[in-house]
Length: 343
Image (tube, rainbow, N blue to C red; front, side, top):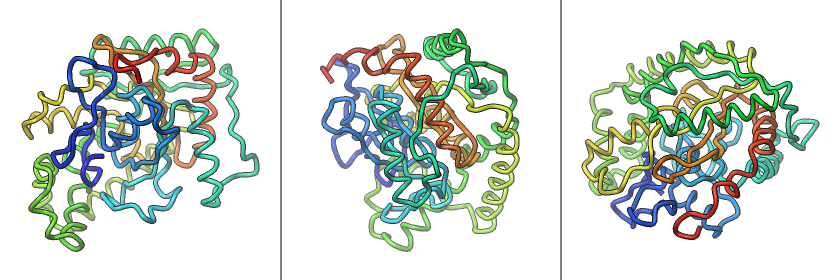
């Protein structure tokens, strides 16, 4: 995985970089930070995997490898035993081959955490009752035409099956993304952890991690507190709007998995990383739960994911809708076919 889970592409200077199995010619990233997890599932060496999702670290590798990735609401599952990146935003998550598998793992873990409700089994929703909120421009602008087309085609199939698709305005999106571009609180919280617990580790950090942390040096504790306060205000405002739809829908990752050679320079890496996390980070910053499921291949032959987001602690509804989508669209990894590397 990416060092300290601080990266959305899946690169690592300390260990060999996992190869995206969907490109037999070029070494492409598999998404991060749970890079090896996505590969292990699509190649069949694991039935499911656990990861953490601070800005998309479960959903990005799931999308880029053609698997399913679930991010639960922050605070729903404990962070015990997880090396912290950002305690404010860190969230455990599940990667699996299908929504059905992800739902099963969710039910087992949720019951262990004492969060299971009276009806423990998640069942597929009736599509005729599902209201899909079409995410605002942020999620689509700069998204390549082929990736957008794959997403829109899947939404058309669901509409034909009587699911409703309605434009949805979420003005908090831009405010949240501006915080993300500033570094939100992630860089500062990682720096504080390293300074306190692992000061000797700082000199050996992956250059991409060190480059992204450099902006935290000039942020004082008052500014970090202000950003946490602003995030809390945005979360409250966004969740109050979401009772009008069951899920928000968007492309999961608005770029094709880059070639490793194209992101070796930290500045190139930083630009690609920002784009990889552009859509997924919104769920974290707005306090939502989210899932990605594979729905097709882009022009390069790399899987594309459909992202669903729902209100905080509405995982049961989110999974219920995702199960219905999977049944209608087909078990996606079967439909995608085997990767060029035979995974």
